[in-house]
Image (cartoon, rainbow, N blue to C red; front, side, top):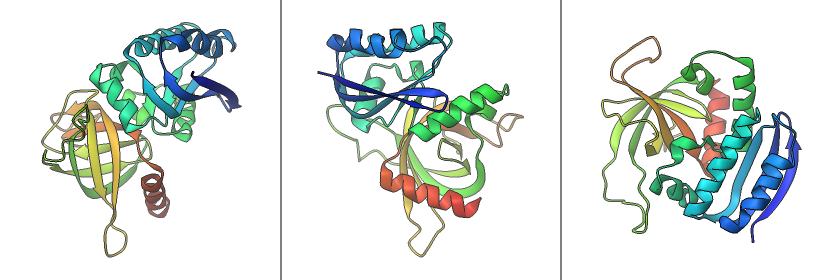
Length: 239
């Protein structure tokens, strides 16, 4: 049975979910995210302890998210594991949800959305200018496991934050494609890598007013704790 704990944060109510989300959880999810909060409440779904989401539950979550939006609030998912993220990708519903790596990123997004009325790039990616070498490939997990034999493509990150990246690359993908990203940080002798999963927000075939160069803007979906610490330390030192 799915367990749901609720706690308040600045600008949002956070729902900590534990267990499997299936059709039996529908009533409880609606009670907590729709009926149990005032209209206009921003909901953050914490998936850190979610073991699986059934295909039926994906439709339920989508309907609840739409109802939250109709009531004037927003709905965001954080701390999703690669295994659960793969369920969203297999059923091609990633584009229907706002997925962020952690609560801090979600709360910051809420503040930015409330304070700014700029273009999508400006809202999603206020980042530090960098010049980092990296690699990318399609994230494909599925039943056969990650396809380690698929080659990586060399890229360069020209801007970076905890929430997103702009990659300069001649190889671009459609919006909502999930990529496995590896970035080399220029710290120390060994140049440690940061590993993360990110979703393509938009691609640019040439330089324009909205893009610094040909490449892709991505939003971070998953980064584990050790990788997060490496990235945070690099950004703090580089700011």
